[in-house]
Image 1 (cartoon, rainbow, N blue to C red):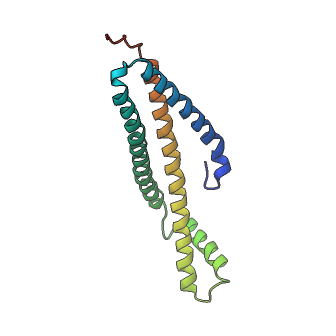
Image 2 (image 1 turned 90 degrees about the vertical axis):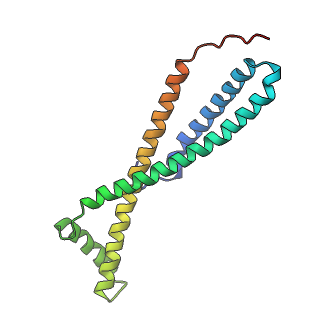
Image 3 (image 1 turned 30 degrees about the vertical axis):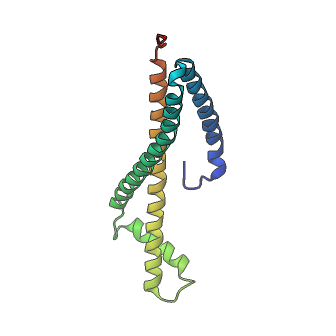
Length: 160
């Protein structure tokens, strides 16, 4: 994954996820409905809807918080390796400044814009690294769910 990825790069995985989630939810609802007695149907239906809606909100809030924290961490770690007087950093700023020099006559303004471009590049790389971490967490969550499903046993029929 790079900062050049666009919608078309994510489309196959999103289609696979949509199909998989639909099948998983349908199977879950069928298994739940088959194992309840009619007196509990309304309660179980409400529980399924609350779990579905609240679970999505919890997952979204977790992922947003996780990505924000990881982006801050990666930005800090990348920033630790940028030395203001190092040759590579000065070369990068000089290249940005020369590219921007045509648009401004003030060398200080060109240097400020070049530094801002370097900060933007750091932020972009930190965002990409945090998204990679987010996909890794989502994959681990999916594997944990597969493991939990594999460990499930058939429920005993409820007495009526």
